[in-house]
Length: 308
Image (cartoon, rainbow, N blue to C red; front, side, top):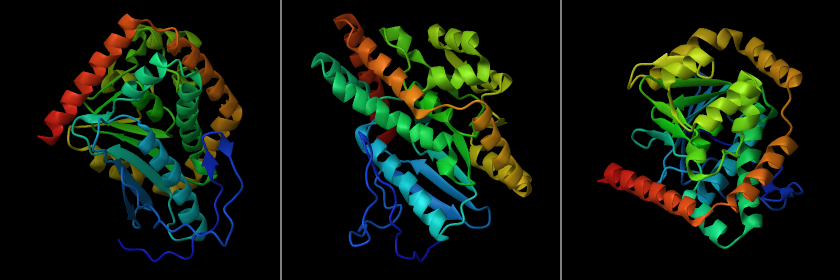
């Protein structure tokens, strides 16, 4: 649908070093809301749902461009919801890349920073990631239920990102994993924090240390995935979920808020793990970096196949 937007209200903007002063009224945002190169959005007023899909033209990973788009996307949601332009009740994120939700962190960028010994750059990247996930975990401090729609594999940071959603709905046959230990690293963008709160510390460490892939069915049994869909039916299952639960929307929002209150996850905790991750990354040896490069090559071949 086409929406007429009122003037964009000033919103709290963030930089990689943290929040800065709100934009002044005499400095209007010239970009149209949700005009984002790497993200496709569609608002369904009947379901009160903002559908969003990652549509990268590069490897399906969280590169700096996509992170910047997510940061602006979240600001646009807050502005549109607050102004009434979009009465968003459900927020859904999926991917247009065939067979992939996300392959996680930008390994090529990691390898470059590691070879240069640039700890500050690694920390900036990691903190940009966890700030986005933390805002998502808080539902942008709005009465919005967040849903991760998984129609393809989610690895590394892609899996970590899904852990920040209220609800995850995945198609059968999709795979999930935290492969970082295979090249001497560990998942530093929230896996420890999110999984330990859901599964307990021992089970979370076991999953992280294994480095293996998990099926959607396995994660459903663990309670990490909330509903399964047949292949090609992911969006339909999300629509069914929303239709069945929208009358309980307020109650569900309150339950998620209560859960966050009982078991809070401060941003500072996520950022502290990022610091540990950056230190570990700088200890990787040349063999580890070569394996990382091979994974980048495999991702690039996947992209070539998808666009062929």
